[in-house]
Image (cartoon, rainbow, N blue to C red):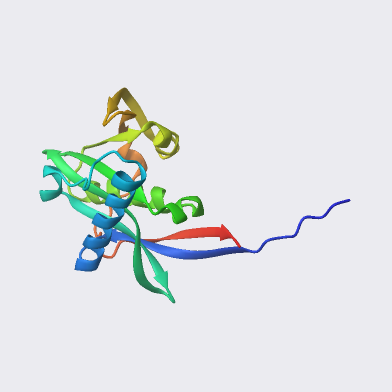
Length: 180
């Protein structure tokens, strides 16, 4: 019989919140450039657009000794019409993607923050490879199309599954874990 070594499972917390400090906003922009420009090559140089002027940036912060130290995830939300909010530019640092919970936590914060601000409909264009995550989080695909040369699902959140988040500045902790 062959025994495989048992690897310890290490957990911790990350915080998802509205980006308010200058370093949080800068970290979100840098992460978006890393993911959408350098890694995925969807945009050349920078992914900023006119939506950024009215969007609220949300971030996932990794702690060092319990103190938030690094932006490891981000998404932006924006009200496109009265009561109709949208999310876009969801990105997670590559090394943090398999640890679990960051993408889900950012999505929960995005929809919950919008809900607390009068959202009656929340939509997003989601890259096809990420659609299964959104389906698990109670989103429905309304249409499939190509955006920026990649297949995307136009999706809508079922708002009944999201609690309003009235204190987005503080946000909330999400449990992360990984095998060491």
